[in-house]
Amino acid sequence: MKQELKKHIVLGLTGGIAAYKAAELARLLMKQGVEVQVAMTEAACHFITPATMQALTGRPVLVNQWGAAESGMAHIDTSRTADAIVIAPATADFIAKLAHGLADDLLSTLCLARDCPLLVASAMNRQMWANAATQRNIAQLGRDGVTLLGPCSGAQACGEEGMGRMLEAEELARDIVAFLQNTPLSLALSRKRERELEGVRVLITAGPTYEAIDAVRGITNRSSGKMGYAVAQAALELGAQVTLVSGPTALPKTQGARVVDVTSAAEMFDAVKQHVADADIFIGVAAVADYRAAQPSEQKIKKSADTLTLELLPNPDILAYVANLPKPPFCVGFAAESENLREQAKAKRKAKKIPLLAANLAQQAIGADENELILFDDAGEHVLPRTDKLTLARALVQHIVILYQQGKQR
Ligand code: CTP
Image (cartoon, rainbow, N blue to C red; front, side):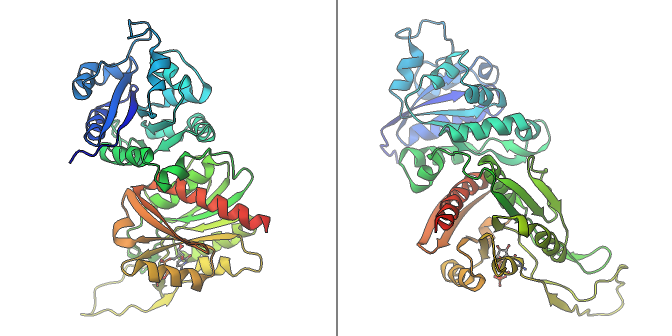
């Protein structure tokens, strides 16, 4: 059913392979009552034609700064009537332009001359995303009050795998509509993101742990590390000094963070003990194995009996250890539950004596690209609705900043 949102956006396309997703995005937005005016860079026209976008939106597409636009001042007029400008896909080059205020074509001019919010959906190769220059530019956009949508990690057009892939059209449409409706998540994300964690030292655990049974076998879980790495990225964007203690994951190294690779819970515990004295904030995102083999064998165990009994010993609770230090950093925990999420999460926050706990349903969260979180703190609960993990991490880190700063003022 068509809902009458009665909003008007400019959808800006820049030259990346993800431009094909913009056609579906325009269609989904219009279905929800959003009027879409498309503007394209010349590079975008190499990936998808203005004719496609025009046919979908029923409006002429703005491409050329020097063409006979309706009033000759398209860059001013178009942004005046828009509720938001959304750039999807936004290439590394276009993001650099936005960060520096360049205006050398119609779309960049339109962004600079705008009088409305700007939303940017990054799309690029993983190395371009990880490059220090891109990260600087992304952080600058955050400081300028630009709302960042994604990117996410996954298979890339170049055949590689990693961070930088644009969100899918459905995800973008949902985030944009939420933004236009002023939901709590969109408000958190559209806050001007100053370097609020400048000089603040953040220690994060991420990924699974692997507990060896013998030379080739072990106990682990399906955690991908995506949420922990997204939290590290979000903290870095706000200027934090990040130490990321990571269990085994297939994710690329987070640029700008000090990454400590570990395998077992015991190694993770050691690494945390080594770095915690220097931490202002500790965020335990890792899915730490609760038990390890009592006597791991150095050799491969041979199949010699019908049944094999494995004795397991409990692992140290890293988060509880940190939270119980005489002078603990500000502690944030995660709770992965498979049922009774709210009750279990509240009990876990109390048991671990931590000011903030982010709870999620394990079966929906582990290994997935998307998630939803319920944050529990002294004020009660705050729901962060389903979205990609980086967007969620940014909202979570915003919440951490507020509580951390309140704590320091006391
Ligand atoms: N955690 C930890 N060390 C452990 C186990 C968990 O630091 N040995 C941390 C996790 O990183 C997470 C929080 O504690 O921030 C909760 O983890 P979770 O697995 O949900 O809970 P557990 O404490 O292991 O309890 P249970 O498995 O019984 O739900």
